[in-house]
Image (cartoon, rainbow, N blue to C red):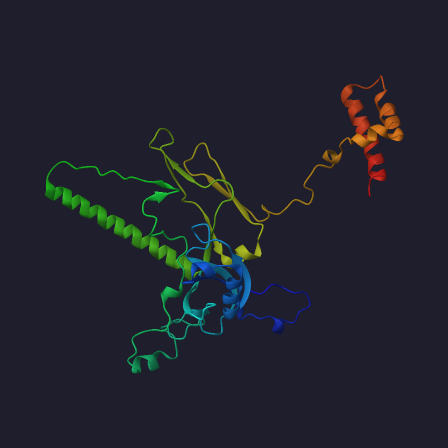
Length: 324
């Protein structure tokens, strides 16, 4: 959705342009810099933003850029990068939060089943599509290269031997494998729904885990079950939105709060009373000495009141004299 502009005619809005986060793969490591990111982005559309790090904390696997895409045109699948020595590299494009689209036309205006070119595609006996689900970038998926590593620490999972009949043991292991496979299928279906609906996970700014089991001892388990899901457009329209976790004593589920203006900078960052400070140059100023003496030499005031009186009298004077 384009931003609202006051007094602008409705026909002047470009509703066909929408920003997408793209991941550009196969770029040689020595070419991963800002200029190449801008050149590649301009070849696709208007560059809106650049993300300077992928999931490994830097540009190692792909370049991530945000580009304005014309949704009335087919999605671009590759971009050709020509190096200084004349070598050409075909770079693959993957789109984040890509909604359902036609695998024949490459448009999001309709699905593959409702495409008007479907009959023509079937008659030509062409069973391959020019587009597919491979255009979608995996969001928050597992890194196959990491294995059992978590935050730089290798996790060693011990195997517990089962006593008893080998047949019973095999039956039990088969049942566990089926349960794990079923859980993975359900989670993948859930991720596919999030991608099709273009929903984003608003991660908390403070706290992370929202559920705790076995709160004492080494058996304590923490998980992140509760979360906010909202459209990418809503996240973009509220840049100051923040979420936080509020710990609960009488429940194993913590509360999560959503503040639409939680990250907005404060209009006044400091208490104005903290802006006053004593400057050494005042010790040589005759007027400053008189102000301090008049404010301090009061026998009817205690030490706190004298300090406050010095501040209230010396502050306006120093602002007037040293304002420039």
